[in-house]
Image 1 (cartoon, helix red, strand yellow):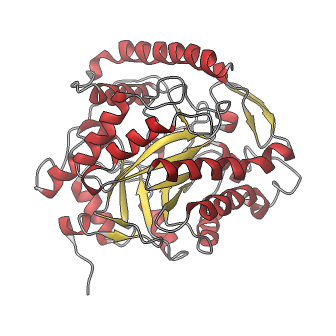
Image 2 (cartoon, helix red, strand yellow):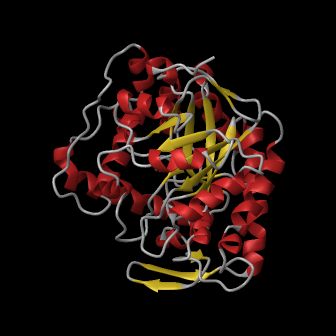
Length: 399
């Protein structure tokens, strides 16, 4: 039987290798929503937002940058899930985010060299002293402890009732740093050759999938390219995809770019989007795993075309769902097939990300969201909140 086309292709179910069935092909991809309370726990507003997305029709939501430890966060609004966490609060989030048959996964993060300096001591594969980025080198003992740390968070995620986890190996965070020759200059068993640079990633995957068990999904987010000179190349990324075929991973989420200071955003190199469907088409020939593509999907027509071309099984939506959290239901009803996105005039680095992050806050608080004309004011509020939460973080964790 032929695969469905058009709108039907976006609303056909997808069964993952672990046995989990996603009710349609639209996912809320991981964004750093910065809605944690500063102690690593979900807030009522964050719980309400993930319920809103679930009721809006997504098959899957992924919570960005959930840390297994408190000393390597990407932002002070990240969640932290470990043995010191209040699991009851995570259980409430899992229940809300899986309303109406949706799945809710935690994205397992470790910011590494890009950890938020006010509340961390950034460490990466290699020591770096660059404009805007300074970090120490992880020791072999610290590297050896990482797979069990990811496995522990997986174990707790399952206990709390989440449907799965996603290993974050993209966007310049720790596992992505190990893959990249720009960040990873080691000369031991974790650096040098492409095989050595991906060793830690596959040790983490083995630990996580061993802990997951039946009916609990494990995804991975992988860069198609770092979009940095000297970073991960497309041929190497395709080799990683091919090697993932021998693992128990259930879904490969393809994205790109990095938060390295001064690096271009994914949209800077990809025209009007979607940005990574060409890479996904190549990846399709290297793996039998289900694929998801995240980055630049703005219209139903783009999503349908990617599905019709066979480039991807799932469509990862981020900013579109920050604008219209019930967009899947609207598309299924034939409405708002091309949502209006805000336009920003000469935004500073990080400014657009700040706007969308505060938009998520407004959604969580049932508001209408900020006006793009207020960008300087929004950036100031965003930075002030980070500062306040960093103080809370230090007080709670003693960082």
